[in-house]
Structure formats: structure tokens, C-alpha cells
Amino acid sequence: MNIENYRKDFPLLATRSHNKSFVYLDNAATSAKPVQVIEAERRYYEDFGVNIHRGLYEHSAKATRLFQETREKVARFINAADSRSIIFTHGSTESSNLVATSWGKVFLKAGDAVLTTELEHHSTLVPWQNVCEKTGAKLKFIPYNKETGELDCSSLPDLLQNVKVVVINGMTNATGYMPPVTTIIESAHEHGALVVLDGAQWVSHKPVDVTQLDVDFMYFSAHKMLGPTGLGVLYAKLPLLDAMEPYMFGGDMIDQVWADRSTWAKVPEKFEAGTPNIAGVLGFSAAIDYLETVGMEHVSEQEARLLAYALNKAEKSTGITVYGSLDRTKQGGIFSFNLEGIHSHDLGTILDACGVAIRTGFHCAMPYMNLLGVAGTARASFAFYNTLGDIDRLFEGILQARSVFG
Ligand code: ALA
Image 1: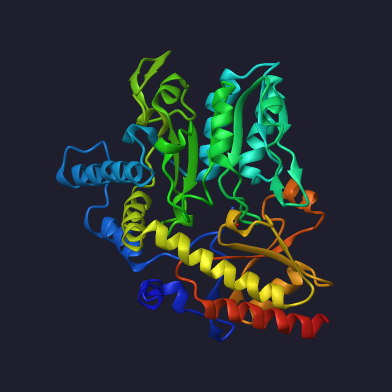
Image 2: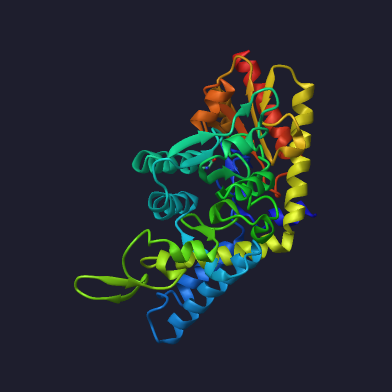
């Protein structure tokens, strides 16, 4: 893979910060965008920037066609059998809330249980806390093994008693640990439970096949996979979507409206009230094209290479604690760590002065930080366009922090 050629497509990577060449290692927060994506959004606004579904005129028909073609492209990208299973949302957070509200609050009752983990992003965990509070269902957790840094799934069959839905991520945003989702999905289904998969960190970094996984719901965000902000996807099996009530009400999601009642449009429009992020969807289309050109296998391999290089450097250093699974094959391209005696925010500030961007703190995963027994971590998260040189710059910054705080 010719990384340097790809890097030329990303204007962010050519910027400077604090008068130094910019090293971007906060890809788990959002990815850089290639010119192809920026150009697709610009073309929409300049050449045919009108609303979809409404106009009979040529520009509206074109916008509508490209919007729907992107839905089909997204379905192909994750190997969904039917593009009606693809709902465009504002992001993973909205997708998570949609499932919790339109499925969880309607189909759960006292006596039922929701099984999740303490490793979840708040946007995945908190909506289900609310579902349990409102319905009387019980929130249960797959235990975490601090020795291995992994979930302990040995008691899954017992844990799954009364569980109607398992809510779990494919890759944790705070450390990059990848839970055994295939096993969890199979086990959940054997016990009659559905599975909601948070794919926000997963779909952007690994090939994902929802048909093979047989997952019931999965969501992810365009902006973490080279696409625009303010756009996400909810994938769900069609019978589930058909049985669910709309999450939001308004234009585009109705069939008939009388003064005192209404009927709904079919899936997926039933869940897409109001004017959608049309420019974002068309930018996302270009992002998927880009990722397919690179190839998700290559994305995954390059990120594994970057992680191995960072871990190797960490092993040769003293006073670095790395978080996540001890089994590095269960780690995605996230290097989450702490330096002995230095707060992650202080490290982040020194790294920023060195032109290196990482994320520090609790990463919207406070329960996970409690399990790790830390107030936060420093998180360097990789994308396929990062280089070994970027990681060298990270470690130069770490040395600098040591000299300042050591
Ligand atoms: N969820 C994003 C992150 O982990 C914002 O950084």
C-alpha cells in the first residue's frame, strides 16, 4: 500500500500545528477527509443542491437518485441483503437512541433483562440505562477480567437468562479491545435474545459482514470512516424495523395525515423524518468508494502494523502502562496508555505543542475507566494513512513530556 500517495488526498494531514507538521492520531474521534469527499459535497451544493423526494424537476430527481444509490452502496459495504435495512441518522448516538426508544421502550417490560458491558461508550450504555429505568427491565453486565483485559464470557449461558437484548460494541473506543462478538451473537440467539452492535469503531477499521454475523441491529458513523460529520447509519433486520414505531415524526416519514391521526411511510423512510443530511450522504458515498479502493483488509493490516510498532516501542520504554487486551490480536488500531507520574491531560498538552494530536481523559467511557482504576488514559488512534514516522513523533513527544514532568 502506497501510504504517501493516499496521504496526498487528505488536506488535514498537510496542515501545520504550533508551526510543526501536524501528526493526527485522534482517528477514533473522527477521521480525516479526502478531497474526493469534500469535492462530492461541494458538487452537490454547487451543481444540484436541492431537496430530495419533493421536486419533480431534474435536479431533485438527481439528488434523490444519488441519495438512494448511497443507501444501496452502504448496504453492499456491510453486506446487508436489503438496502431498506439502512436508515440514515445523525450519527451513532442517534442510531443507538433510536433502537433504545423505538424497540427497547416498546418491547421490554419488568422481568426482562438487557445484557451489556461496562466497556461501552456512553452513547451505547446510557440509552439502555434509561430504557431499564422506564420499563423496569434489569441491566446486567458481562464481567470484565482485569488480568486479561477482556470480557469473561464463560458464564454467558447463565447471564443470558431472561435477557431480551444484548448491547455490545465491536471495538471499544477507549482501548481498541474487540470483544468476541461472533460468540456473543450466537449465544444470544440460542437464548432468544437480540443483539445491538455498536460498530462505530469497527466498521471504519475492519471488514464487516452483517449477514454473516447475523446481527440484529448495528450502527456506525460516517465521520469516523472518511465521511462527513452529522451522519450515521442504523442497520437493522427488516422485520424488526417493520414492527417498530417511528422515532421522530414529521415530513417524509408519513403516508397519510388527517387532522387527528396519521399513518407511516414504509421502512426506511418511516425512520427518516425531515430533510436529511443530503450533502453528507453524497460525501459518504465518496468515502465508501475511497475505502473500497484502499480495501478494508489493507486498512486493517496497516493499522495492525502501526499498533505493533507502537507496542514494540512501548515495551522498550519504562513507565508506560498500555490498556486493552493482553492478546494483541484482539486489539484494533488504538494505543491507549498512561505514563507513570504524568496525567494524561498534561501529556496531551505537551504532545499538542509537539504538533501531535491525541485524545486524553475518559473517552466517554467512565465505567470502563473505573474498571481500569484510572481517571483517564492517553489515546493514540490510528488510521490507514498514518505512518511509522507519526508514531516516532508520538514517542518523541512522550520523551519531551518526561523531561518536563520527570
Ligand atoms: N466517540 C469518539 C471518541 O471515542 C468521539 O473519541
